[in-house]
Amino acid sequence: MKMTGALVVEVLLAGAMSFIWILLLVIRIIEPSAEQINAAFNVISTASAIFLTLFAGVSYVLGWAISYLAETIFDPIFQTRFRDKYFGDLGLTFYKVRSRVFHNSPNHVIKDIEYDRQLIRIARSNSLNFLLIAIITISFDFQCDVAIKLTRTISLLSFVFGVLSFFQWRYRYKSTFYKFMDLYNGLITNEDFINGDIATSERPINRAGVQGNTSSSEPKDSN
Image 1 (cartoon, rainbow, N blue to C red):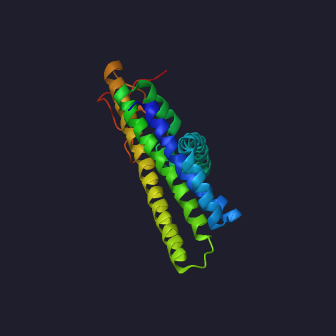
Image 2 (image 1 turned 90 degrees about the vertical axis):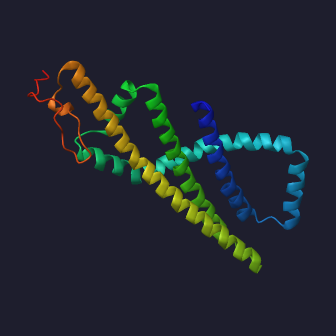
Image 3 (image 1 turned 30 degrees about the horizontal axis):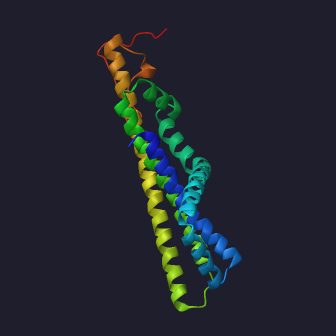
């Protein structure tokens, strides 16, 4: 599957998950009767092709919206802190490393990075979607014991899936830092072999933040 097709699938999945909690929220607010719900299902089943097309379109729009919302929430709370702590300890910025890797790496490396980024976006959206499903589901006030147990079970499972998605996102997100640094160091080492040596500030850096020698000779003045 091409990256464009994979991106469309990713957005549709995120949007479909968002559609679930939005539908639950609407039901929670308007509190339709059983007859109204049955009537709605009958209308949908009668024109299923039309509603399926509408569902796909709405899910696509919602997918972009929830992805942006998740990014807006996660970036100042988690992502910026993780990035600044890791790359700040190395004396670098993430965007400098990422730019160099993207501009100098072969296509198969870029595709591997894009795959990781896609998984990160999916996990991030899932963590937010599942959390919202859990919150809205637990807010339902049913009188029937079976319905109460069902909503509590769905809410608990959604919360668990949301937590698991968050930790998957966290693991994947931090793992990309190591991958970027390995690729960054590899590019610098390759330039060292081609150009003879490089400035001290451009020497490969290990994950502990220590610059390593790439040549037995003294570093030449980059100026």
